[in-house]
Image (cartoon, rainbow, N blue to C red; front, side):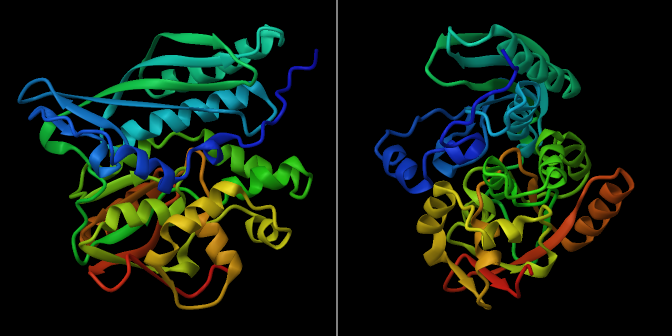
Length: 344
């Protein structure tokens, strides 16, 4: 049997439940009252943080999804990098990881072996230890990790601490959902898909370690809710982000994917959820779709003071990490995000 995975209807973070549906469910669940639970699900943050002492807190996250590429080894790398990213978005260090596996028993087990190998190598690259996992028989392939990290309780990067005047930095290009979707039907080049894979398999470790040296007010990783969905969560009801579309990094051929209408249902769910909170100053369908596009293993979106942003940007440049200054934080206007200009 050829070692390839058949695409499912929605792979990677395009398979996530829509933010609107998820919010309706979570709002009905009683909040946990525990003074040591420093970050729970009430702020839509990237991971949970639990204080175990004055000097130590545990960071926990879990993420898994169906494949978005045919190569099982690369899929394992992407799924692992995506799960590990939540730890880095909190400013923490990876310690342990557990595999989460759904796999058809009748499928070639060599495929599963390649998935797990790819995931294991990314955990090692993150400096963590793969400590086990859990598997079930399922009709479709799904894979991911439960990850535990550690951090000092006073150094947590929450997603909603942005301050007026902050600069917004983005550390990976957008467009993975568009490119992977178009690749399924042969409408992007192999080179464009390779660029997407390179981005999705890259860890956010270096970017996270660099910004920890500075005064980070807010941080998240851009994944299934798209750039605008996660940015709206960061702004909350207190601030407005002014985004300069011409500064947004995007994967090659992403605008072409929009022109060919290789769009995802997840992007439409993202649009439905936050469109009323976003003002586009110019009419550009490509800009809108790229900013709503669900990302798999996307970059960090960091809010920090201008001087610190300057230094972080320079250091990332020296380390070969993409770092784009995409906008800044203002006092609250009538919407959460104002997008000036257009991407193309």
